[in-house]
Image (cartoon, rainbow, N blue to C red; front, side, top):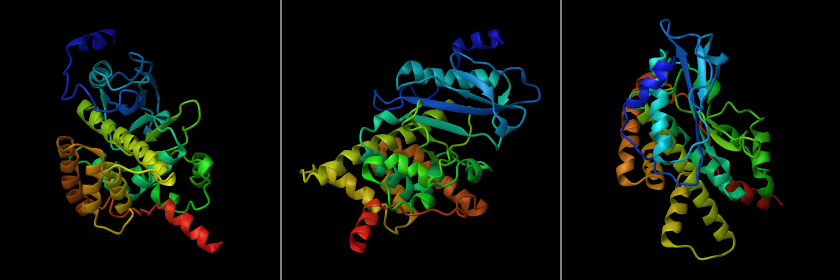
Length: 316
């Protein structure tokens, strides 16, 4: 086992050296995999600061490896590639049951308003996220509706949430259930992370980096939208860029075609060059879902906290 780990000093470096996220944003990943029949079944402990443990959701050969707290730097990005190669050499494989979870430090969002914007952004584009959260030609795993079902249909019913207690009230609405596409149950506790559970498991370092960028950028934009919302409440003047970003986010609430939501999300999250990866995922995976109906049969909701507030005022 030691030889297998040491032998990865000259591993395949992969496509990326950076994720392109804010340097202060913290990142964590959980790799779910299963030991092949010919693999080292006894491999269970920690590997290079990654916590290894048995994962009962995958059966007796299931394993989960959780990273230490990482950031977007060349060292940590390199480590993601290396741990994936180590697991492959140990005889691990990805099955249809495996998930690939990404944690983003919740402390990146500085105000409650940012969490409101996160849920609106995620919820109103959730179907798009289901199509672009996995590699090209890969739809969500078979148990995604059990371990990472849509959150928008539940959250759309949150009308009574108090501004200063938003996260705790939202947790109540979600019935304190962490098994959602977007898990908020770690926010304001010891972990204090926002967990994205939607992606399938993978031992492809490039796919991990692309998924981390997708979720990290979602949190980054939610924080920006939260600050814009606060400026609007305080009647402060917005820049043209701020006006555009907030207007695009608001359009996601409308009954527009899915292709339109995809285009808006790409403009909000990525540069033109970065979009190519996710545009290809969307194009291919959408065609695939027309045949397999994995996502098409799911129910998604509409989230508009401003609308709820206006309705409540009218009732009074």
